Length: 125
Image 1 (cartoon, one colour):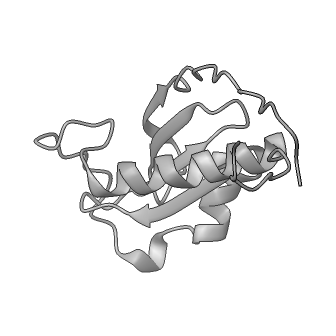
Image 2 (tube, rainbow, N blue to C red):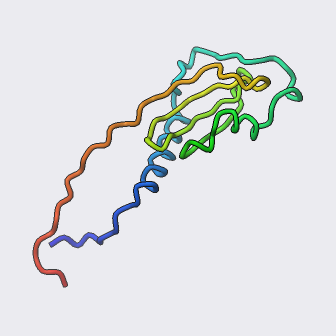
């Protein structure tokens, strides 16, 4: 007899968001899509000439992604890590003055492994 509690299945959009958060957390702590030795330089313009984070998010079309993380890179770029609704992970560097895409890398979603759910047999209390 299986004494494990029965939990309702997780909604798909929640599963994607949870997976995306885990994936972004993993990417934050290890080497990203760009090789660590490669430094992407965008500008030496003073920050007073840069577009705001909100403007950069609009240029990146952040609202079209399920999850987005923004930071300013060491090379003075607006750097985005995002998870698309289909699970693809995107790393993008935007020029902070012009908004031009300096580099974009897209990693396909990890293939989901199918899990076999086992049903319990026997009498329940």
